[in-house]
Length: 166
Image 1 (cartoon, rainbow, N blue to C red):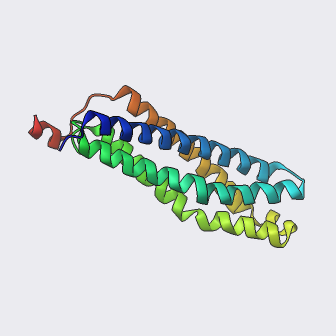
Image 2 (cartoon, rainbow, N blue to C red):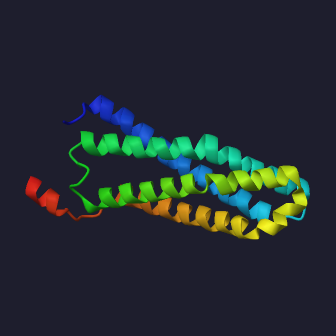
Image 3 (cartoon, rainbow, N blue to C red):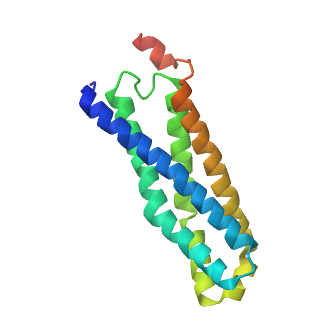
């Protein structure tokens, strides 16, 4: 079923807004991860990891879920389809990977925020999680930029299911 043009525009605006918001929030998260890892100031470390926890829960999670669902609605409600083109499948896969990666790392983010609240000297003992969050955030930014590029370029390539539809 194809959406009406007005509905398609509304969903497209929501999809672009949530996607760009997710990329921006991931970039903020990445910069806070750098600050938390590099600074010697205990108050700055505390602020960085608590802000990361809040950004992850209240900004990134809603944006990634919004991106997923609006993308699903767009692909199912337009001529593009969900399984017709490889670029749409790749975007869906990237969105799922980034969303699951975030959900898996919510606990380490919360743990770092709690550690800094309990005892700021303990944070240096959790270097593994600090570096892991930095790497994951950087990878997410790259994947989101790649997904954005796919949206703009819409490279050719029809899936076997798409060939049958033609």
